[in-house]
Each structure stands twice: as structure tokens, then as C-alpha cells.
Image 1 (tube, rainbow, N blue to C red):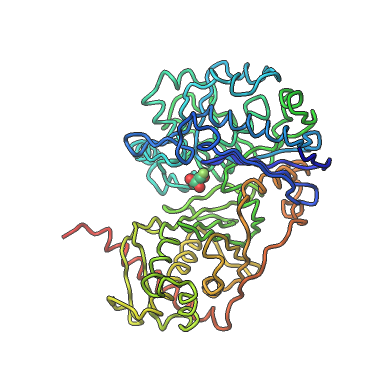
Image 2: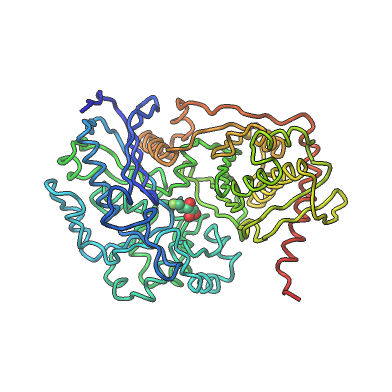
Length: 536
Ligand SMILES: O=C(CO)[C@@H](O)[C@H](O)CF
């Protein structure tokens, strides 16, 4: 086996939906080791598809907790067999898919603190969980619990102001409420409830790890301003919940050292620190090294925006989480369902199925598209809830079609104006130092990125986010090691390689879009109110 030269490092873990991944990052912030275990491929005995079980009802989605435990056993054994030198690990942190919940059975903490280094984790933790199939973020079976929680707190907007989001089916508080209502005995036999992130940290700690502020913001239970559990939300979900959750902690907290189990079985140094694990999206924000005023745009099947916010404006769309790298600030997530599939459809219809033709259409039409505006939602859009294709000319009159080149530009300008309008609705502001970090399939098309730069009036950089949650976790481990809240995260990660500049705003862009954005916003509101009118 190739021996890995001794190299002081931090480990970054990601317990995601489909796999467990790990990277080792050295003091110069170079990734020199990575590995992964895929649930479907490497643990077929659990019978998951995409790492989950979709139940017969089509809305309940779970993952077996022992599959996650066994995946960690496998990846640690793979690292050991490859000659990885665990004695060089100074600290570790990690990420988990957000919102999922794990239910530790009464007495499990005693097992966790007295693990035998002669046996794998999954053999020793077999009887430690009161719920074996854990609800995950793809579950949408808790609409009743969502309505009850919003009613208890004074409505959707009130809940959003308190916890950063209105009630969402996947959010953990609603999932816990469902388990309490439908499996009361299991709930009563539960001594601790973890998120996937704090569960994973517990496996390294050999004790229950606390929930961090950032991933805890995805539960509809944490007051994001005061960073304490909301007693009203806890009470509306299930009894004795606060004692089962434990107190939340700042995301950069050192929550302890790796357990003697890992020291004796794998050779971790006894002083190897564990920094609080967090959600995969907050960890990705850290991995992308987003700074104040920056915005990350992931142009994938659905388009996702990561925002850095100082003063958030909670709304009925999007999600606001406590920042994972700065306890005073916040991050926001906005999801736009009509992303790359919508771009591919218009490419096929208007650019002969060719991206080069698509780019040519963008280059041959002017900024602002002569005042023509389009809304392209072939599937029900999330942000906002509108469906269908809607076109308007410069006089704001609805038209049935655009010339092909105009249609291409109307799609891209519309997608990016919507992103700016809804980002600003959550409190985001473009600043002089703003960088737009683009990732995902469409970020390979320079002409699309040019429109992005023009609409936002800010430079666009491209970044590779393949391992962003893992790399962000390793960065956060260095941050925790360096003293956490006393040291700016940006200082800790300044040695990391910089993103590549791909586009800067065209001359005159801000005049064009400052005029067009309010018009787009008005038309969107018009469509939204028409969509909400009762059918005739
Ligand atoms: O639900 C989500 C965020 O709110 C997803 O991005 C999960 O974190 C994916 F694991």
C-alpha cells in the first residue's frame, strides 16, 4: 500500500445523503487525501436507493442509522489499510445532510463512552437507537405538524422571524413532532436526539456532541437571533424536548477530543480535537470561503443561492441560518427549482440543441433585451410559487412568443433578475467588494456568466465545489484549532487557492438593470396574485 508521508493535517467529513466522504487538508490548505463510501454500492444489504428508503406513501423518506455507522467503520478501515497516518491529525470536523434526526435510546451514552477498540462501531451500537430508520431531508410527510407549529407561534411569518424559516416538512422540529405523535413509546425511550451532523461528531467524541447554531437553524426550533431553543417551538413539537436536544453551541466550538476508541483502534493522537459538525450547506459556504457581501450561485438541476447576511430579513421563502464561520452574521439559502432543465429546454427549442448557438443568441441580443421580460417555470417554481411560461413586451403587455434569440436572453436575464430580487428580499445587498462565486454545470458557459455579472453588477468567479462540504469542514477544524470566535475564519483560510475570474460587468450594465429589476419584480407580483386568485 502506498505509505502517506507524515503530514500535520485536519480531517473534513461529510455524512451526505448518498455517501460518507473524508478529505485530509495540510497546514498549507492543500487536500492530499480523500476517500468515500457509497451507501448503495458499498452497503447493499441496507437496500437504499440514493442512500434512502422512499416509503410506500411516497412522502415518508428515511435512512437506516446503522448504515451510517457501518459506513464510518468501512472508511476508517480503508484509510488504515491505505497507510494513512492518523497520528498527524490535529483536529477534525464535519458536515451532515441537514434536517435529518437520530434517536439515541436510553442508556446509549454509557455504550458510547465505553466502546471496545477491538470491535467496529456498528457491532457495539446495534441496540443504541430507539428509531432505526431516521427521517431525512427528502421527507415531506409532516404538513399537519407544520401547520400546527405555525399556528402555535402566530403564523408562518412569525415562525420565520423567530427561527429563520417558515415551517417546512423536512425541518427537524416537525419530524420530531410526528415521531412523538405516531411512536410515543420510542420517543419516551429516547434520551438524546441528534442531527446527522451532531450524530457523526458523537461517533468521534465517544459522547453526545451538541447541535451547532448553524445546523440547528434548520429545525424550526432555534431562535436565530438569541441562539437559544425557542420554548414555544419546543413545546409545540414534543414534551421534554430541550433535555433530549441539549444546549446548542457556536459552530466553531471545540466540543472535545477524539475518544480513546479512535486513539487505540486507529492511532489518532489523544489530543486530536473535534470541532462541532454542522450542516452540509453551511459547511459548503465555509468551503467556498464566502465572505461578507459575497453570493454563491450553484447552477444545477435546481439553482441554489448561498448568501452572506449581516442583518437578515426572514421571509416566507428561503432559509436563514446562523453563519457557520461568524457567530454575529448569518447565511441564507434560496432554491429555484427551474434551473438547468429549463435552460436545456430553451436551448433545444431556440438554439438547435446547441450551447454554442445558445451563447451566440446571448451575444447577439443587447442587455435588457429591448425591455422584453420572461418567466419560465415548466415545473411549479419554489421561489416564488408560479408555474408556466409568461412573456411581456416593453409596454408590459403579455405576448405569446419572442423571437428565438430574444427568448434565450429573456430566460437567462429573468432567472438572474429573480435571484437578485429574492436575495435582496432576504436582506442581501450587493457591496463594492461583492464577489459572485459560480459553480455547477452552467458555470462552464462564459456567456451565461456574463449576464450574471451584468445583472448583479459584480464580478463572477468560478469555483470547483466538488468537495466543498468536506473541505469546508477541514477549514472549520483549523478554525476551531486556531481559537474559533477569537480568530476571523478568513484569516485561517487565506492560504487556500483563489477562485478564477470569469466575467466582469459590461459598461452601462447597472443603468440597464437598475431600471429593469423593479419592472420584473412588479410583473412577478402580478403573476403571483393571479396564481393565488380562486379559479373562475
Ligand atoms: O434540505 C436541504 C437544505 O435545506 C438539503 O440541501 C440537504 O441539506 C441535503 F442534504
